[in-house]
Amino acid sequence: MFGGVPVGAVRRLSAYLLALVLAVGVLVVAGPGAGTADAASVCHGRPTRTIGFATGELRLYRTRQYVCALAVTKRPGPLQQMSVSLQPRGGRAAVNAGRFTRQAGPVTVHALNRCVRASASISGRGTSTGWVLC
Figure 1 (cartoon, rainbow, N blue to C red):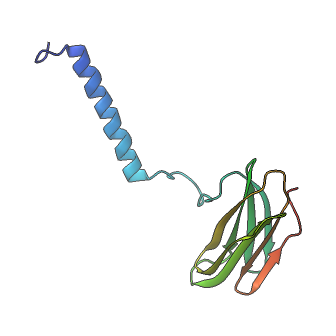
Figure 2: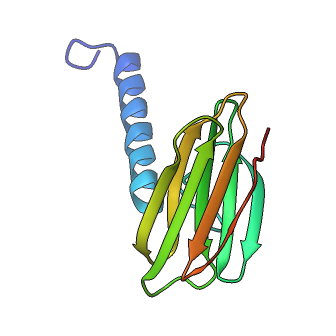
Figure 3: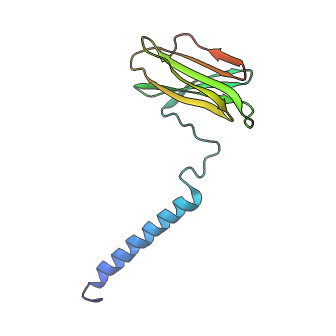
């Protein structure tokens, strides 16, 4: 007995607290994305298409119900005019445009059983798709 508490309970509690402190310490030092080789996408789902153009690429990702798009520059650094848009057939386009250093987007639309049309531009050069992912 340790102050009226069984020794086994004290050991279990201290082991639990030690594990908790170690887990928090690892997350603080390493961060949640530690160990990845390149930057993780902010789009959910599986990559379905990557369409390259002169100044960057348009990346499309898909889950069962949603499609997500990013425009990523080939040369990150200075602010550049960028835009990305994604439109489901029969719906409104989701657009992200402005001056960015690395990427425009993500933009996500609900596209369950619908085709989408995507476009991207970086520094005046760009690309667009027809109706894809049908």
